[in-house]
View 1: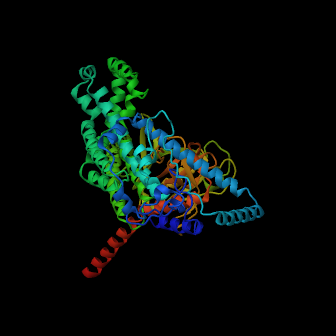
View 2 (view 1 turned 90 degrees about the vertical axis):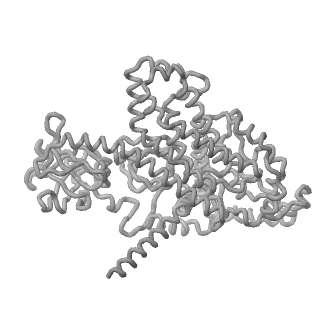
View 3 (view 1 turned 30 degrees about the horizontal axis):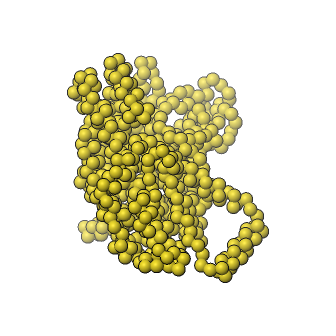
Length: 619
């Protein structure tokens, strides 16, 4: 968080004069967002004289809410039922729109940056002249409402909040400020996406889980692993959606949704942890059934071809709960970015986000725990110790990276000679707290000849010394298995592989864009435009529209980045992303990230102060 705070300070300096600049990629602008208790003038300068319908309109949002009638229950339920998109389609369209919006914003800033200073001055003069002419002509016209257009497909049967007939006919769009309308859209998206999610869950249950032919093909234990507690997950979603619907029916201007999210996340969302923790066994069972049971494979294929499934495979339905719980956290973040700072709605959004973060972390830990335990058992069986045996299996240990490197051998005087025996293969297993150095032996076994705690590792990159010593780095073990210092000169197969090993072996070293010692940050940013599934433990799985800071990168196409919304780090191919060129957008992204996570540091500092105080009292 110190690094994030430094980034926030830098962002504020960059964007000091642009407090009303572009928002994140969901909208085309963002600014100071009024809460329900703040005042709101008639839309952007419009007066009762210009808009006769507004002559008797209230001047505050609170008064406006008193004049607006609730949406009829039947009308709202019809809207929910008419949502034609399955959640998989809804999610893809939404994230693709985010990507496209950022591209447009980058194009706008590049276009303005291409202009010379003289042309910019002339443009400013023209703008001043236009403003003077407008003042003489009369009050300015009301600005156009922000168009978010999350789902612009006219055949999707999906509506924006501001496009609802009840909203259009109520006159509320003439009362609310554009910032409040954006907040309404963010809350509306949370509700309608939950409806789409429930629609997909219902299809999974009715079309697959309750299919009589499928029940006969599967053993009860296979069905339990394959579908887990999906019925409990659907019941929780239904209860959650019903309460969101009741809130929507209270008033066409949504007062809040994050209080409902917080309450359900704290009381009911534990079912997601159970479901997601089963993911490793679920995937394995599904693959085995497809390979070993021809009747199962044929029936599933037949069910997938049903028009109800929209061409989507069963696997896309099975992963829905994990996708939803992570997406819900992002939707709450989107609301949090738009509420007024210090307001009641900000407090409820922060509470909801904190609770969802706990659920998501528990889900991730559940998945990792299942896969890590099996992986550690497998590694332990393959190791033979030439030195004193080191226990590999531990509940607090997991694999970070493994692979083959070449160790330079022979006397120092021969290290520049191009001989076949200059390097010999060694194999490294790097865990979160331990490095084990081996040589591969026949029988898919590994003979361990050295080890060291991860905290006692240091790395150093060699300067370019020709082709033979390209991609070579020095690894120092400050205290190895013999309780002495040891040095290894290691050669990787490529520049990216060398940097990935160096980053994993010594994670706090200085990188190209970040100095971990000075806590200064000057990071480019990228957004994910193609999803990527991590292939190695040190890689990062990317979802569409993820925003990441670049911490390091290689010439052969790999990036070491940190995702803003959860601070997860890892390597990924650069061709999966596009760079965000607009400095205002990068600055805004950092500030919004700091706002979402700003509650972490005070709590941490309070805990530190308490520990210090307790230590002094004991003394």
